[in-house]
Every structure is written in structure tokens, then in C-alpha cells.
Length: 378
Image 1: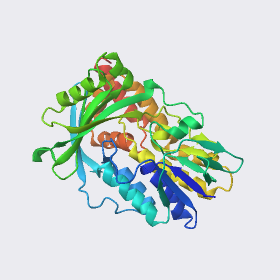
Image 2: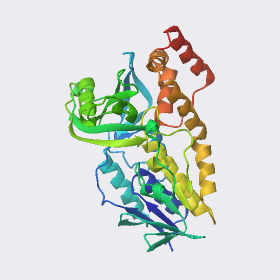
Image 3: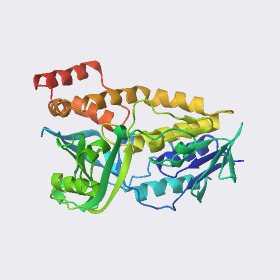
Image 4: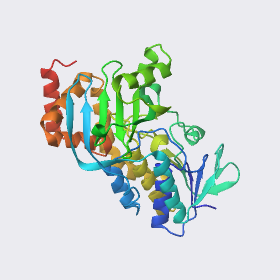
């Protein structure tokens, strides 16, 4: 009998495994993934400073120390309002092929057993779960991504289309002049929609474009044509290669954390920031908390995991839910970016909300709303 079986070896799954072995070194932990590592994963590759704090909690403070920090962020709003500033704490850009493999290797080094296996069935018993008829575990963490098989098997519906985004990601050679800042360029047409360019530090950048799935369908055009075309339109100086598309189940504010002894984490739980599409921070946090609950709870770990998740992200998720509603108006985003361009503390706060677990104090909300109203509330 395994103490913990984890399905999915991305950041969320590896974080669960690492935390479980960190707290209980003699725990029997199994990590299953359908692929061997290293493997590619369509993603923006951005590792925010908040993620590095999580890595430190997992005992891996130097996991990405060999990658150059990116100290500036430039954001262009749908209406063309621009802000470019130094972030309070630098971010990193690390290809997921590298990042995920390092996490899995670290888990293996702690004694986690890693197997290549595609999960197809779960059977629930009073005090354990059986995976595919052969693997029995006291607790299961489902970290198998946006199209989670485990979520379907335990009867939790997928994220509704209205809360789902689609993005295309590739890589491009980057001019030296653009190599010191992450860029987010928003688009009015089909809003909310934006392109990004995140420099890796080796003369290339992760580039991409994303929009809500209903907005894409509303164009009536083939998805490839829209996504590739708008990326080229917004970043004409960065011709992309190796383009791959992926879905993003955006957080609706109150994600369902699981059923019984099965805990959902990361993308499988719909934990993706609805303002930015960022998910690695949520993945590391939720994975860490699920790993804690699994080894600290004698019985069903789900209630403990739910409490931990609510304490860590509850207020933040409610904040992003409200802001995502307001951000349906491109004018609101213009006002927010305009305020950030004039007040550095606002810029820092918006970065914290978009990339970490920040919340918005009432005075700032009022300042943005006032600017929005004065600009005609569009």
C-alpha cells in the first residue's frame, strides 16, 4: 500500500511528492505520468518570484539559479496604454522541458518512485483508492492537467467553456534590445486577449497568444488561423516557430478540490489565474498543500487540503474572480494600466495579483474605478 500516489509529474504533482517526502521521509510515495521526462509542455515558461518562494519551501532554493533573472515587465493595454518598470522581485523564464524534469529528478532523489503509466481507472474503497486495479494508495493527488482523466473519473465536471482560454506557444529569436524585459501586449479585438514575449536569456524568447475559447469560436474562423495570425500581428518582429496550442481552465473563484481521498491540484483543479493565465504558482502551492494533507492526516485528507487551500488562496481567488468580471471591459484594464504607469506601488500590486497571491485594497480599487469612469467606462 502506498501512502500517496500522484498522477501527473508536472509542477503540481512534483510539489506534492517533494513535500510529502520532506515532511515524512519514510512515506511511500509513487509518482505516475504518461510521459518520460524530460518532455515538452506548452506554456509561457514564466517562473515568477512567488514560484521561487515555493521552491524554497520545498527545499529547492537553487533549482533555477543558473537561469538569468528578468527584471523588467512591459505591459501594453488593449487601448494602447503602456507601462514598463522594474519588478519588485525578478522573474525567470525556464522552458518547461527543463523545469519539470528538474522537479521530477529532485523528487526521485528524495526517494519518490517514478513510473511511466497512463491512468485509466480508479476504484474507491473505505480507506484507500485502487488505480487501474493494481496500485493501492491511502491518498491520491490528481495533477494530470487541464484535461484531467482523474477529475472525470471522480465525477467533477470540466471547467465550462466560458471560463476556458486557449493559447498558442512557440519560440523566437530575440533582438538584443528586447532581451531584458517580459512583454505582454493586449488586444482590443476579441478582448480579453493578449500576446507575450518572455526572454529565456539565451537569445530566444517564449512567445504566444491567448484568448477566451468563446471569443475564438465567435470569429467563425479556424482556430489555427486566428491564433497564429494574431500572434504575428501583435509581435511582427518575432516570427515564431514550434507553435503548439493548449487549453487553460481558468479559476472560477471557488475550485472544487476533490472527492473523498482524491485531491485535485494545479490545472486539474482549474487553478489558473483568470487575469493572466499564470498557473505554475498555483500548481506549486496546491501541490505542496496536498502533499502536506496526505502525510499529516490519518484519515481522509481532503478536508485538511480544502482548509489549507482556502487559507492560502481563498481571498486571492475571490479577488481575481471579481477583477476578471471587471476586466471584461477593456476600458477597466486601460484604467488599471494607466494607474500603474503613474504609481509604482500600483504596478507592483498588479504584478502580485497577476503572478502570485496578491489582493487589491479598497483605495486602489477606487482609484482604478475612478479613472475608468472618468474615461467613459467602455
